[in-house]
Length: 289
Image (cartoon, rainbow, N blue to C red):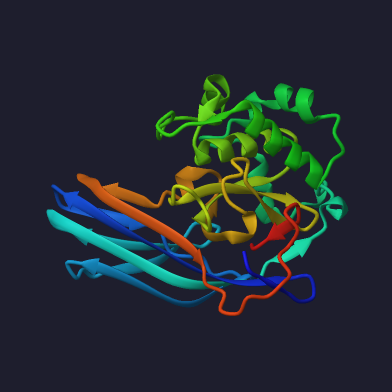
């Protein structure tokens, strides 16, 4: 990842996009959550969303996290979707040892819901395990890192090992999953320790094979920090799409009607024009919220 640093920040431009094709067999309404998010640390330089056949659509801001969703209705037939964007990342980069856990009484009201269990992250069922494995560790960024390390060491990344019904506890039992499962288990373990955590969907530079990626954030100190227990791509190359309690809040496509995806391609490439020195250290704490 090519970056420049200025006052504790790194600047990168990432080119992201996807192409999708669906065979629609009944009248259907689609919600696509594939657009890069706009945040103070993630600036969209340009973007394009195209539909074939040409179809009216509405851009909606949904949920408490203001996730951008494209809503459209189509008739039976083939539907082609294309999204492209150039995104400038200017994250906050900090030294992990300086980052402590926020105390529950001091959490901002909008963060409190991310301590609770959710559909895929049954943190209330993992309190004993979380305290046995991580309860005696020094609270802070390093404890969340230890959770990620434990998941990486105890799970096998295996495509097709889970489905839309698989929860964090299911993954813990079967000891296998994909990126969303790794994130769900990490979120559940964090919440079991009263560390606010939320699911993030996005694009990832150097992800192999290329796909939409699921990772997570933990709220430490006074901000959200990015983590990824899969270790499949560098965190400083993540472009966020949306965030929520778990993957149910940020599915890249939600379909009301009958439609089958026939093709999908996803990409994220470093597009920084001028090579410069100054990549954040591999263990740096990165925030783009």
